[in-house]
Length: 239
Image (cartoon, rainbow, N blue to C red; front, side, top):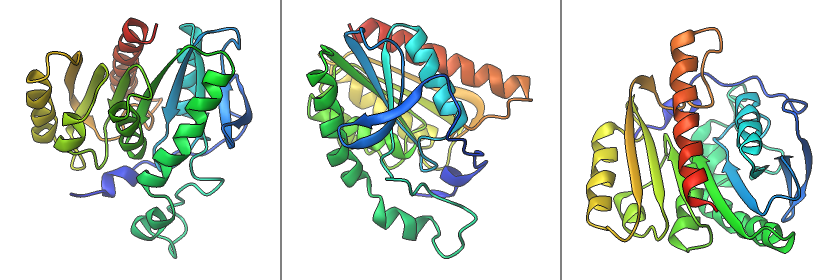
C-alpha cells in the first residue's frame, strides 16, 4: 500500500483559522465550533497534517452550522507531520503517531463530550483519521461514522463496524483504491443490520475533501459534494 498520496498538497497550517476556538477536550487541545447547547456532537479526526488545517476547520464550521457541536482534536500533540522536515519522513513520524494511539486518545474525547451533556456522538475520519474513526465504530462508542479517503482501513475493519457507516472514496487513490472501496461495499452488503453508503468520486485524488485547490472550481465542487454527503449521513444518523 502506498502512503505517498497522504502527503500530497500539504496545507498551509493556520492556528487562527476557522470561526471557532481551541480548548481542551478529553485532555487534547481541540478546535471546537458550534453551540455548547447542542446535544449532538461530531468528532472530526484529521489527516496527518493535523487540526490546524484551514479547510478542515472550515468543514467543522459547516458541521456546526448544521446543528452539531463540532470537535477537531489535536491527536498529534502539537507535532503534525511536516514535509519540510527531511529528518522525519512519514514512516518515521508515524511511529510516534500511530493510529492505535490515536484511537486510545479518542476515547477520553468522546467521554468528555458525554460528560458535557452531549447525548449522541458521531465521527468523521480523514485519511489517517479514518482508521481512528472506524475503531470507534467497531467499539460502538459512536452512533455513526463517515470515512473520507481512508488510510490503512482494512476489509476486516469494515466487517467489525457496528454503526451506520458512509465511505467516500476517490477514483485516483493509491492509498485506498476503488477496488478496495468496492470490497468494503461488498462486505457491507452482507451486513443488512448496519446501514451503509459507499461512493467513489470520479476524477479526484486521495485527500480531495480537505486539501483541494480553492482556486479550481472543479476541485471545490467535488469537495463540497463530499461535504454535503457527509452532512446528510450525519444528520440522518447522529440524532
